[in-house]
Length: 194
Image (cartoon, rainbow, N blue to C red; front, side):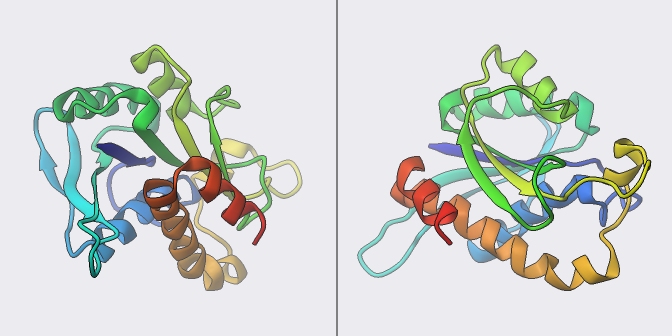
């Protein structure tokens, strides 16, 4: 079984911000699976256990979708608890997160690596004791001028970017489904050659 976690902050104040794009991808995956997230008290997350890739002759891959109820920099505890509850190994975890070091709209898959200053990844790595999990990096670009990166990721997408966000969320959900159904190597090749 895989777990797919979307990073972000709780509450309506943060819902439309760049930092919460990972959570939007999780909601799209849940919608495609005909499900929605509900409170999972044992891990302080909202989660859904679903099957991805159901079709004629396909039973689908079991996966747990989740978002933390806590803030970005405390994501590790809830993610670790959810993995333990569902007996998912860290190498079978996919984390979807915003990425300042990629241009807006660029999607990249990779396994392992550092946190790149991302507090959500830092917290997850500390809680799991390993960096060996899959990341889907969703490019949000760099802040304009001298704007503080923290303020930038906690602000909404520009009106120009906003026109593309729904399509990009769908493409990110496609990439996650490809990892689950085809494996990381084939999914990476497919995503990075688009």
